[in-house]
Amino acid sequence: MNGRLFVISAPSGTGKTTLLRQVMTGIAGLAFSVSHTTRLPRDGERDGIDYHFVSRQEFLEMRDRGSFLEWAFVHDNFYGTSLQEVHGRLGQGLDVILDIDVQGAAVVRRSAALEASHIFIIPPGLQELERRLRGRGTESEEKLRTRLQNARKEMEAARDYQYLIVNDVLDEAAEVLRAIILAERAKAHRLPDGNPIMLRLDR
Image 1 (cartoon, rainbow, N blue to C red):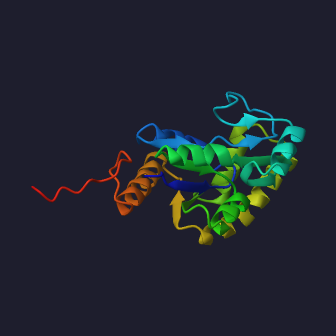
Image 2: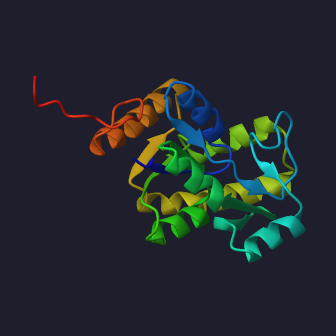
């Protein structure tokens, strides 16, 4: 039985990465698809774990070879999802988390080859989002304003997603995300650990 694809999008600064880390440690059979990007690593990020950090030339060569399920140009950098990695993990029976922006999610949504559950995570409000972005201390004022403008546009795309989670209280948001993943597994007649449910009619 192949795994299930979960597409998760959120404006920058919503706390999506922290939320995903908390949820994935408690659910078996769940894998994170590591995207390729041309941006520089932030403090604490590791190549091959958080992202595959590549040069722009390398990224464009991969794109031209058709190596990406989806790719997008966001905040002056390229991001892309490896087809080989996604299909390989799904084929192992793992459920795969795709952490991608609204452009990439739209590409996956239009693809007839992959069925996915689409989840959008929003902050409690734009003021709180600005506070979180400023707290990171990684952006200039100009880039911060650009991110906030993009966040407004991205949040308009939330209506295209099946599920919407407000990341106000982290533990509560994590509980909702866990419930969605487990419900999708039950819908597909799978156990919470991801294995298929074997019906026993002789008992």
